[in-house]
Amino acid sequence: MLVCHQWRDIAKDDYLWKCICAKKWPSIFKRPPPALSYHKLFVSFSKPRRTQPLLPPKLSFNDLDFYFDIWSDDKLIFSESISGTTLRLGIKNPPPGISDVLKSHLDNPDYKMMMQVEPRFTIPLGRSVSVSVLVTRKDTDQIACILNKSMFDYVDGTAFRALAYDYLTFSPTHPFVSGIRAWVSLLFLANNSDSIIDVFGIEMDFCDAANSENEVLWLLDILDWK
Image: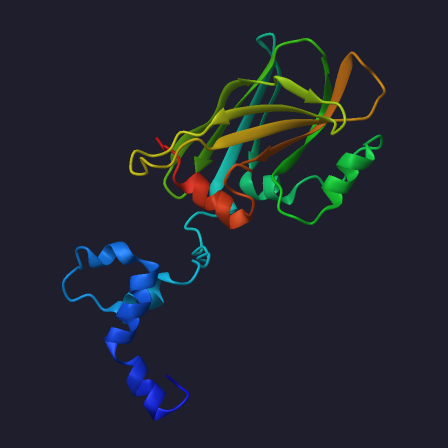
């Protein structure tokens, strides 16, 4: 339409776009919608959809506090509350004895939610270890559950982490959002022991659906807050 007046006049004729649309969506001509613009149809749906950028989240890590409780065979072995801003800062001074795999992960500038465990604690392998995580928000004075007594069922010796997960519960106002997991990892030292893990840090993520700070904040905002 920008080439010349003649091409512009031809392209403004909706019959041209009707012929093009007939090849792309022939079924629409079996029952054409009234007052359908075939030019608009083609322009709207002929190209691949572009990913829409996320709007800025309403929630911020300044509004959040997280509460971690870890049990071994129903005995409490770790309990800590941590602000969202501190969890977002991650582990800045890891102890010696960390594997190269974890060191590379900690040094990576990508978004993470981590906390350092001080003092460290050890867990004999074979014990039943579970974790619960609650989160509160200061802007509305509400609380939500992220994990509830989820078991650390898998220990990855090559990545030096034990993993637990639970499915998030979302607000009834978002009935079509489901199947998204929250993961908590216990990060442990490479101490050459086959019977005990020496935990120095905890990481939480929502990698099923959210891998950036804004995505995580949007996800947390639609939890089932009480």
